[in-house]
Image: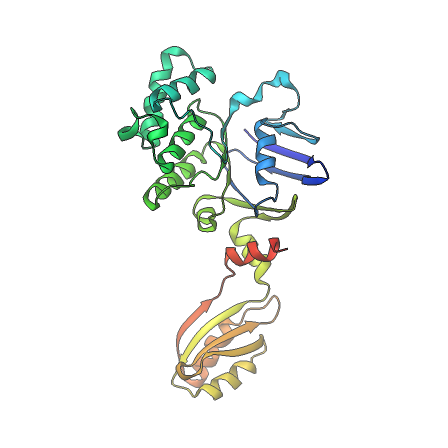
Length: 309
């Protein structure tokens, strides 16, 4: 099911947590929802799930407004909140059976769904323990299991890999990618490599406003501006190479990275590339080009530039 967010606003007293934002998420898409603490991520996700009310604007789930209670859209949504509230005195199996019944799963199917979730979320060894006896990572897995137990068409996951060890993180990332092939997934996280490994598109929010929306590659290109190349050239004198590179029509600037190793950083003019010109120069001068690497802007740098106060 698609999600359409239209001019969504939420205030807490004098503070505007979410400020007139609009975006959509398509079926089969994993959206990475990023932002610093207090940016409005969790508030937006809570409004999408119906956990808190909408002050202004609207949210459509599969073309139906979430504001109209007769649409009963919550049954289509699985939600893992940031703080992952669990009943610590309940055994894992009992808790998941309880969640299944709350979600309206037929009694004859609850046991089957619980077994499936236990397997998918890697809870086999811990399934008979009380939730309060589990590590933080396994509690997070229980939270994921309850979010998915009713096989919802939409998953809203707020920091789903918090507390997981590296092996568990890899498993959950794969699970989210697989789920994203047929479901609509909104994923909030502070782990930026996780976004690149898991998400099809990134939306960055800061101070309640959307400041970026696109694929990781699109955001890099927007932030990168001019092409930047790192290159190593052998068989020539560093100063001669530097002068020759600067004379190329497509080059804006050249700097040494390591002069004694003939390692340079070349920035091209706007909307131009210098790769072919550099290659032809080396052929002409009979220099050996041993490295030519485009330098990409890191997602961490993009995030910081867009959200720094």
